[in-house]
Length: 264
Length: 296
Image (cartoon, rainbow over all chains, first blue to last red; front, side, top):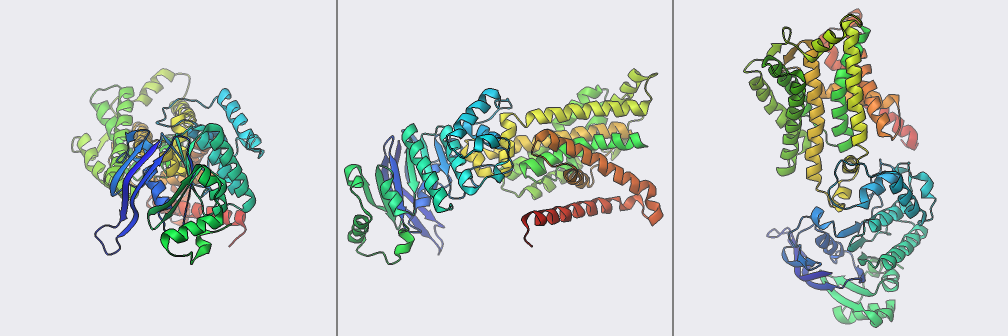
């Protein structure tokens, strides 16, 4: 699904503050993979997602999505394949618009013509879809999204993104800004939607427990490189202890600032 | 006099609807308005003097407005110029363009030509007084424009404009180029403004290139006054309150012009009053927000 070859990203090249945040990464993502991405702050996780989505362009290397070279394709064109959820619950919805308007905006990708699609049938469909969130939002379809809580907004964003049926789902610590109860709820929904729709996903998390519990593949990044990439049975047998040992033997160092990487 | 307030309010409400579109929905503070309003007026005047039918003139004025708005959006999109500066640039350039349209003149009277209004007066002659015929005519015109806008903003494209003003990232994630939307949105908004200018020229009986001076302030004041009258998240109410705001603004200006001399005010002070009105609205909105949040 995604083919990354020799991908490199350097910020401020040719200046004293030059910084290589991604160092010639190779990554092949299979159709249906659910990859969890971990790594300390500054490891390049978000930059990697930004490169895939097209918010940033690489300094070198190629990026293919579904066999098509998209290295130089602008973000809005790539977006027809990609659904993306950010850490900020406000980033995925339009605050001053109603729930149903928000859902109408996101339910189809691509350019919108001046035609009215929000009809009775659509409303019934949205009503049915929202009911599976089990939050009572179906009775608030005509309220502005700004009246929803952070957890509700993130759950709604997740639902809206899934409804637009993207090929790839990018999740950037999408539960980090939520309280534990809402975070657990959104994680459950994430798992349910990804399994139901067989979405190819990459999920950044700071929670090692989540990284091990979710997905069929785990990659750990450090200093702009992918240092650990486990899948299948090895991934299933993974524990936090094993992961830390692996990191130690690869990097010949221990986590001095464990709290950055390990929030459990 | 009272029907005059309403007629002028209705004419300027078309412009205020354009300002509402950019300032409130697109979150694109667009100053092109100061140039596109007189542009509509001069295109209309040039058409009428050139023997082109008033309806075709309106259409051309609308197109002229769209292209001037599109220029602003293009400057902003392509050269990464901040929207305020892009608007000021277009507005300044339009000043010269407008003089060209009037064949190197600064104003053009429309007293001896057939305008849309004289045609309306001919039709209604005998059963409605001309001033009330104008009022009726503009009520119908503004109602149609308002209805079209209400419908436009519940279409998929219209909703996308709402999303653009709220959250540009959301638009990009949806696979739509925000630059294209801005081009269309700012264009349409200035089309409305030019249309308003074209009507204003016919109503006043002349077109003047200085007609647009400070017009964006008038529009913004109307939008803000309207926001105090009604609160809702329905687009039909939002457009209605812009129209009501524009009429109220004109009423306040009339009061200033006719009774201002009691406190030594002259018509030259009206711009100051308009600015102060906006400041009061801003201050009151701030005060309201504070009350809602309960924090200092």
